[in-house]
Image (tube, rainbow, N blue to C red; front, side, top):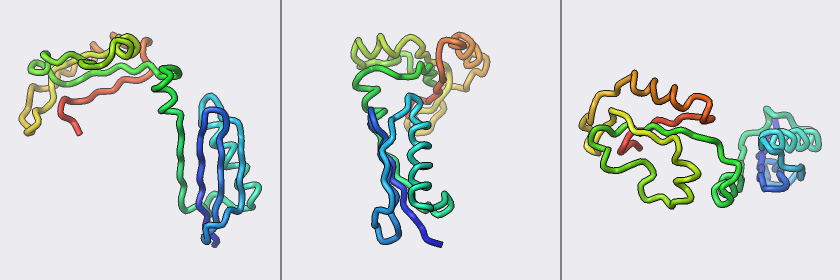
Length: 158
């Protein structure tokens, strides 16, 4: 069975795609509009590449994806999901507030739902404090309907 490599680049306006054979020769290339949800554009590019080449998805052995979407969202400060953050760091982490060192504009954009809770580990693996499950539940309830996602991280987490 012939194998292919798939390459997709999601830009702000267009999503480009190529399909290369095992000799790294281009057997198909497409340019489709980038969709608001990104995934629809990627799916459209892959579908068009497979139709154009006659290949099947099972023949794709390598896939590469490049995108400026994340960079653009950060630079433009637009299109960002509302994310709540719970940092496990109390009681010792209270001296470093959430978003410490971030610019005022980023704090205004992101800082409404950043909290600290008991738990986590020191850099050497020593327990800071036990996680208080009800505290986490209460913080999540406080953010319900106000954020799209909640991230929980520990101070010194990798």
